Image (cartoon, rainbow, N blue to C red; front, side, top):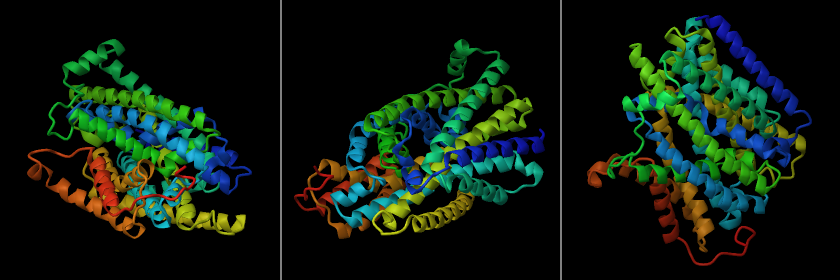
Length: 488
């Protein structure tokens, strides 16, 4: 493997991203950064969001799980698709009616400032953890399989990638990443298809015979039938549905791109198209995982989990163009999740925590504060990446779902309580309730089999967390709400 040539190709790809960023950020302002001046095309957003919703975690971890649990993850994806319909027809109309820049301003109109700040802070915590976990995985793979041969260590790689993300997002924000995400999704999907085509040819299979071969090797099992197990199909589907509602519909990063679309109808088209495209792409990733597992067995390659795909693509003697495709695909999967997260976190902190929209600041001051916040979050990303390096357990897709279960539960409960009840929360208690619920869930999760008769909590952890939060909000609430724009 020519590591120097690979590095040149990677740098050239980065240069292309910077060129797009420079072109799209011309004449940009703060509104361009936050919501793309509400001029994004729905089909561009839908396609680009495939990369955002999948990320490097899907590119590496999803194929790596197939050898152990088959197509088990697709049960969660079915739930994702159902959840997208809820987002499209319940949440998006609410956001467009209120004409929000930050979706968490709904909580202020419905409950008050404390609930608003609490919701925003839980988003900041959730998205920071999720984005940096995905970012860590890709940096780890680049360092382990490419840059180590050039004596470029993990720390240098992490700093360089975060500096690059800063360079192409600091001016254009959403206006830029809508287009860079589209480019990167294209490269990710092309890399995926090229790798599948090559592995099929190496295994002497075609599209028609591949499924039978995967089934014969016990790799296509999809439906979990044990109600007590964490992979029981109803738990996976319900858990996946609520994960989408929380991690897409209540997530400023994902909704920031949707509300940048000109009108509600087109934004809903974007969401529904995205749901089915994501299902198709994940199924292809799972199929790749099965093929890679079969290839590893046939060639006696001792790699499993997150190491499976990169080991075969980079270290097993495959043609150089496959290695290039893998790395470009991996990087393309990385940036849509990392750049969007950094932009959304900056937007949420500036608008929700600092109150930038309310303050009588000049455009120049807003820009200066925004850039400071943007840089601070990049530094926080770096610290989190180093933290995840210390706790890496070898298969991070499950870690991501667990983190989401703890951090998005209170956010889901707050929005659900606001939309589906007519009661007022006790504002003073909201932060304590939102902190107490994840703690209770953690205790329950640690003793689930012992306390629940052998029942193992899986992706439904998010729903359990939200339910506890909802009940505590209800117990401490009072009747009647004031007529606000949110309630009407």
